[in-house]
Image 1: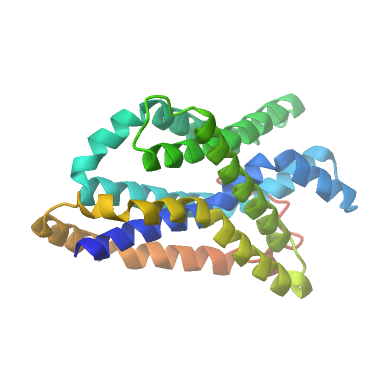
Image 2: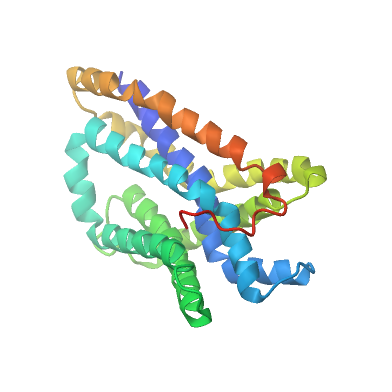
Length: 267
């Protein structure tokens, strides 16, 4: 049972990086991606190009964030002896990650609430900066956990690993936009590139998880607790999977051409 729940936790966290990674990457690369759309000869103002890029990933954001919520719930339930140690040891990073996450989502929510160029440009900057904050902080979090929670998590090694995560997310975001906004004739090749970029985005978390397997197995909850968690989680798993399938089938590239410039109503 311990191995099963460790595998579930790993799948959820890797799934978050592989899916939410492109949302973060799109936010990080928003200025460059919008300029690339301009250079491609697409009609519209610069703000219109930014709207088109954001709209490409907007339908996926909430569904992808669920993976992190599920991973966090699994961690607290399956490894109860670690949650206090990890949260206290990573306190500055956790606060930075939460603030960046809130600001990134605020940028998505507020950027189109007023039809004012200055207002939209401000929230685009917030969206881009907060996305960089999420990526860099995740790298520092992973580096700190592997090294046993050092007193100074924002050190050179943490920032270097943050740069690795940011590069992986940027690559993933670029591949996602190419797939999402591609014509139907190009969807096949862009889909293969997107799968490759998903693997790249997942590697920065998959490698530390492999190194942490012995430590995690030593801190799992008792078998009786894991059995109760299994009863609670079993009905939820099909909903999580079904929601992901629905989102990807509904908002594929065949439906994005010509319509991706329209931001969905929830953003």
